[in-house]
Image 1 (cartoon, rainbow, N blue to C red):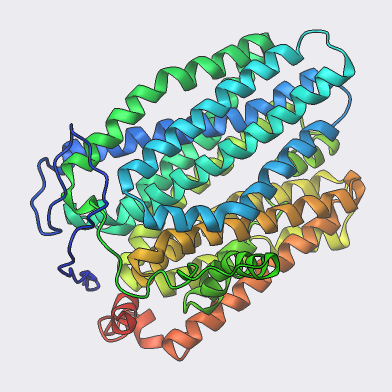
Image 2 (cartoon, helix red, strand yellow):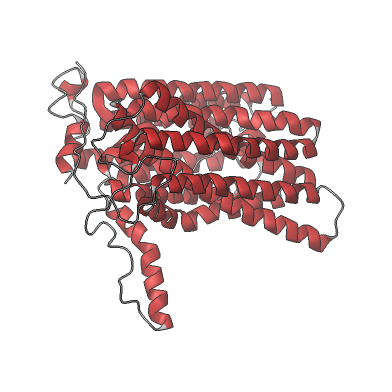
Length: 502
């Protein structure tokens, strides 16, 4: 028997007098308005827009590292500085960006994010082409600095696009089309993983032939996709009247500064710091903080087929072709997690499914951690245990990710949803930076076991945090009767979330 579906309560709220409208689009209507088109026409356009945004972001992110490696051969310094500053910009500004997304017209936000993703890419490609030519040191340094700043803008625009589409539009569209949120979330995550796998391979193949050709390809693909993405997302907005932004309830923006602004420099500084800290304080006080924090902790890891683990595998004797095949296998496991998660959430709800998926991830990596502790780290036996453990653990990772995403979608108010999600993404970037620090502290392949221990400890801490959240929400961690097929309605996680919504 399927578990009950949470039905959001619609309220009658007056449209904002300041809402921006487009002459080509219908004017804002009430949330109860009917759709102009069916799911078969709306969903493909949403998927196309999300695919193009994600593909271009993944291709540029990976391609920039390849371009810098060609421009500055023999050193990882420039690529490391580029990646660190790019991530740090997201840490500093993601919460502010989320607040802007919450306050703004939904279509305007996405259009701006599309434009501000594409313009920095165009500028960066121009800089890369110039850097590939012989230049004096001063001009080369200035051009590199420009690419770093442009990368920060692109990162923030990509963050705004992801938060808006995956954490806001997806909810409204799913409810309007009367399809389960978990199914739409899973479809969006499959698009992410598909782009994560193929976009780097695509640009790598071209870079292997010519770096300059790869730069021009990156520019060309970004430029040609703008119009398609721009129009597709506008058509989704026009077809789903519920996407029209309405006035937030009183007090939902209490974190913003008062009308009487402080006058002295000290007071203005104090007010600015208070405003910057407000989204973080709001995030920590939220009932879903422990669940979100547990997900963010999983970004403190080298237990993925990223640059660090790939370097270790090459050191143990695997060929680049073998490593590429392993990475494809890992992505296949990740994709299977996006199909397993909706099925399991439908049976036992997102809270229990999150607990099960996270413990699956923890259990899959036990053998690899023990192998690192007791065997020679350069042994292929250790490497194989790591490969198998990481590949299987990705099922749990993305199942847990989708479970927490559904909890956030159903448990966070619409008018602070983007701010909450952007703050969560900023925290994820913090832990990602910490993972970089572990490999800086232990840079040798023989020392790879120490980042592995730290990463596994982060998973253990995430499991403890989520267990605390589950116990607080349900009063227990395991309920035997419901796990074995008892009355799921009484303890349905969706029912628990509904009871605590205002």
